[in-house]
Length: 360
Image (tube, rainbow, N blue to C red; front, side, top):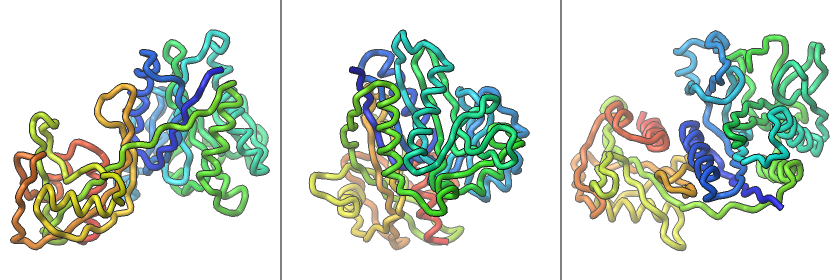
């Protein structure tokens, strides 16, 4: 019997999600791992499929920036769609067996997996043939509304991208776009249909079970990720705020970053942040939890190695002395725009943005 390993990743920056798909797809293609189902949430983002029309983003760039919404072009099918917190995104990365070499059947199976989950909450949904996705209401009905978007990509029967099920999604953000290019119908969520919020872990469980049933597979839980912390060390406030950047030694990548480090056995993220501060800078500070936890892949390792990182900020006096630990060979205090330009990863940039918000 085939096996599907289910990864429940929580928040994933959209660029990191694309990278995870790429790495898992290559790992599956090389036979280094089996089929996987990635379940996650993205920060607010608009994605453009291969058939997207740019005019279906109706908000201007100023409004998108004010809402903190980014735009990405992708190789999936479909038009423009929205991802954001409260929406369960699923990326099935399956190497379809010969008897399933049928694109339409694959899309129908993804739809069926979602419809079975909705039925568990008493929500009747189905496809509308002329429009992609999973819908509540009949074709031609004025109250037809989409509850899940589907946009897939297949290459030599290896699947990537997938679906986005609106669970507790902020539906106002769909006003930024013409969802999937469809002007004649609306968008809804499980929360709106039920009149109450829905526990995301329960929906994740139901989706995992449904996909495994529809694709005749055994469910396998993913191994736990590596746990790390990031710490943005700040001095000054407002327009005068500066960020401490440290440069990793060449054998460790040679790039600039804020402080990062792994949790040691038995540590909490807050304890790890205190320890990393002292070990890497000799600063004794009290970190502030930024309530930002996200997942990403570590480097280019195959099969992918997953990391879950908690972000913190720490604030020091203008004359505080920094003494570098063994992992870095240089440091600089830089203004916020320079820090955001220099940092190589979305998660580190988000850590700085959240730290800056505290200093405003």
